[in-house]
Length: 220
Image (cartoon, rainbow, N blue to C red; front, side, top):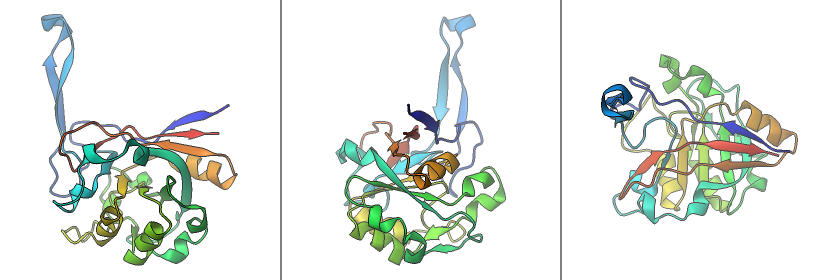
């Protein structure tokens, strides 16, 4: 038997967002008592909560979300368990040494940093991040989907426009899922040899840089 594990953060008014991104707000637009139905009015950015980045996120000439094949958003997962790193630590190819031989086309690399424990705190921005060498090592395996339980695969304490790991991954046609949570059971299953399959299907937004997802893992 398999088990489904929700890897998505809840979406709510005032939730944490990447510096400079639109704030999230939710309020009733219609009420059943007055209008016959309940409908929420939503204001959020494409990068709100658990989401996926399309290559267009970092370069106007790269593919937008709707131009990407669906198989980028689902597949078998391999976990790089890098929990225990110091705040704002670099994730190097050495940290990925056990995972890299298991990667390849169609496989999703899951970076388990443990930083979801700091969600809704100031420390959340001090997450570990991928070096350019580590990002290139992932791309060289043929893997085109990377997921992480942190705000970004690049440093967030130095938030800016460079985003070198994004540019290496997205430049190779990869997608990046960020702000995952509850990766502990996923890491434990992978370490025990239990098959793990991830689903990261985004909203079908037109000409978009990315979209929120309901990230789910199937264990077993």
